[in-house]
Length: 309
Ligand SMILES: [Zn+2]
Image (cartoon, rainbow, N blue to C red; front, side):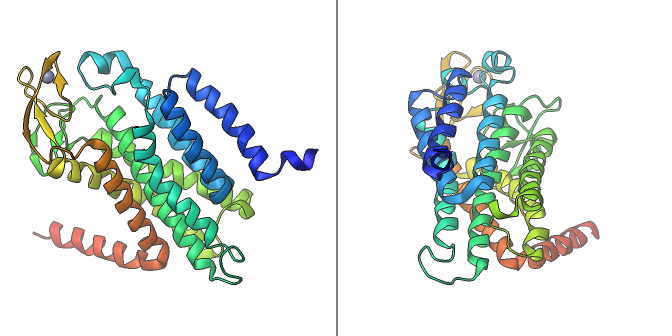
């Protein structure tokens, strides 16, 4: 009987039921979001293992809490998520689909699943992609939900000299950037804790991978979050609020209809999130594949070159 409880399908179903009930009661998701979260959560639990699941759970609860944080104050100035902050299946799949795909990747690159013997490098590279995608989404969500409380006006990522109203697409602030890095620190810490306390539960196989995982989480969080702002500022559908002048992705602002001003009309925030988490994943794989030195070196010389003139 007890053995049955430890079967990954049984334990997964029990854990998803408990977490689902908690998340629904906390109004993190609506019914469609709950179903989406169940599909993604269970798949990651079964394929990516306990560590990957814990990381996606961190994202799920931290972004839920950040969305609820001072919700009324954010709603008053049109900076809050719609639907009382409850995420629908669109939000859930927008942020969870790519991590889920990489979680499946972790599973099928395990020795004996598809091929009898396979280099453990592949499983780690998939894990890097998973971390990259989830760090990007977590950093982006937390930075937007917390960054709006920045005391100083945000600046536009495509033109950092220009100050813009809060909530503008592509607006970045120092507070938001700090929160993004912090999201990476949390995710990296979870990975490290697993690597030390329960190494069998995480796809890290050697010392190089162990050293890489923490900076990988921070770099993908920081770069992925800024890539998201950049993509948003360039391609996303934009509307101007004729009351406060903010450029937003909503058709209503300040209780009035907004005017379409640019970007691709069918390109919504969900598509931007897909794009950025895909890029975050790619970055994670590149870093996980040991091309780390190249990126750090490049960054170092770029800073050196730009500070010398
Ligand atoms: Zn407005």
